[in-house]
Image (cartoon, rainbow, N blue to C red; front, side, top):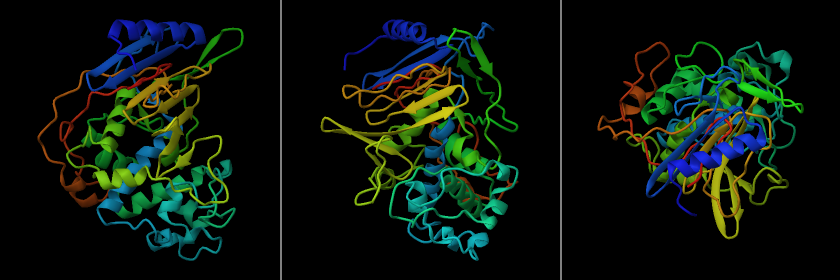
Length: 389
């Protein structure tokens, strides 16, 4: 694809924001020659608080690759087996009679566990352990068909907690975010890094900010992360070998996560993607293949399409831009406000023994903010924005 400078990219983004009525957006494009970024609009419509490269946006289901990556780090460390029933690790599932105890981590990560799509709203006030004990009934035999399931990722989050002794949030922050140089942000509970509000754009053009996301504490592993497009690029880079986090994810594990798990199943991911890996959706067109994930929050959209790597985030409800066959490495995210700062110098501090072998909650296991910070020149975009490489 043609090379763009910062001014050209900013002009393109500004035109797109105006055309689609996006309150705010951010875009970053990355390639071998470096990263080009652009931002546009406001974090909160009408306030004049401009979108910046540091703005964090609600990722919605794009949280799932974060959860999946932590789970696969545990697999690579030998703490969890992909193909053993999760009841081996979750005591509360041991007496289950609804079939969920036989589901494996591989099936949970690839949405082939046969579980329901979502949690009943009446259950949202309970803890993940109590919810597991009550039972997550399977809708069809595990391993026979693809069926997108938030319930499956609740079980993955619970598994992470059981293995690490930390809460899901502590594990994601300590094992993944900080080693990648990502300042943690979550859409509920106390968070040091605030997140940008979503927006609704009505047919008459009125823009209404949405201050809070409808994510419950139970559903954190499904949709609680907020991040910038640059943060998404860092995540993708850990899978492509460009932002390693000093050995966070080995290449064999990363490639395993991009292997299609749906071959031969009775139902595939038709309409969502061309295949599904372990946490990643897979795409094929014109002889090219790439991977990624999408996320929808309240008034926020996010899209990540690594391959040659890119990420984007935007905010409005208008039609989101999508990568085309000529742009297979783009990753658009819409949550309003993202951007991509200059790549910092990779740190030499080694990753602290996988946070001291998954120390229990309450310990001082979190690595220092600068430990293993290594960001690559890639693309990202946020809040009504996109990123391509």
